Image 1 (cartoon, rainbow, N blue to C red):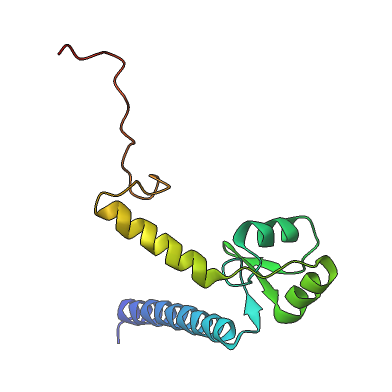
Image 2 (cartoon, rainbow, N blue to C red; image 1 turned 135 degrees about the vertical axis):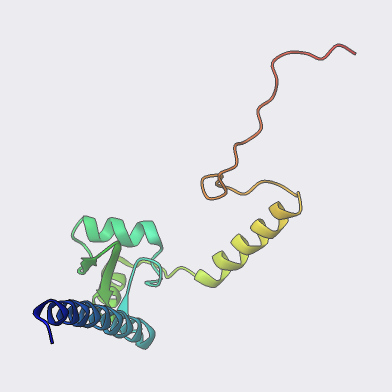
Length: 131
């Protein structure tokens, strides 16, 4: 084979290896989260803001991976025992958010945040209509 073709094959092989590594890494992280041994701010049961604040203040041991703050079950449980923090029922929040969103979609109320929908809230006109 020509040296140029060999170089292209090596580049493709290197890109494929990097892709496989990324997929395997993501699968391993997902398996850890599913096993319940590692929690992020969305699954810890502390509530997203509380989880992040406790980690930032150094009260909750963990490490930041991307945008997630991961803590082990032992660290989370010891933090709860030490600080007496009740766990948050995520199921109730998910149901409430789903119901709010569905009601907003059919015209009963507005979603809490227009940031996700991109819609602008309607403004009241300051001029009076002449009737």
